[in-house]
Image (cartoon, rainbow, N blue to C red; front, top):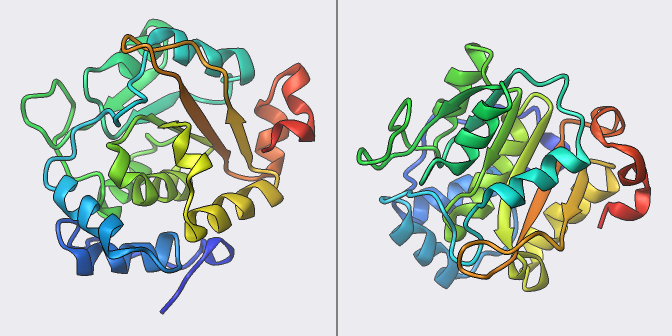
Length: 231
């Protein structure tokens, strides 16, 4: 059973065993099909029970978020969801700009609206029914991005913006490369690079994925309309 970007309409199960390699392998068969190494599955299974926002090397800063407002017209977006709220920077910036924001983090010590497992499709299906997934903007734990990114892409009504370290692209394995290439060829992917440094002195990369090419043209500003920006 292998599904890819061309079968986005295939219904996902509500749950899979995100803390076990077998469950993650099942998730990836739906979301990013291909040969994933035992090592990468092990890293995901070890990280998944914790699910705390903020991947190594790409923690979010307000200046990094400004790059999203520079590139995109957000007038069609009312609700923004951060499924991996972490320290809450993303939620704070969007609330300051007048957006309605819904937050989640499995860690009960985090200040969030819910504490659900954002690796499960059921979490997104619930918010989708509530009309709260206009946009998903988040910074998941790095080992989980191969699941977190396709889930966000599948359920965001207009756009999903996921912050990753640059090596997520430069060291991409074959299934990830094929998935990103499919998004790019569909006119849905913008890679925002050269971001300001975070508090650790590191730069991240925004993977900005639109619901379709028409939404991309509507949301992209000025010079970012250029097809050359779809890397």
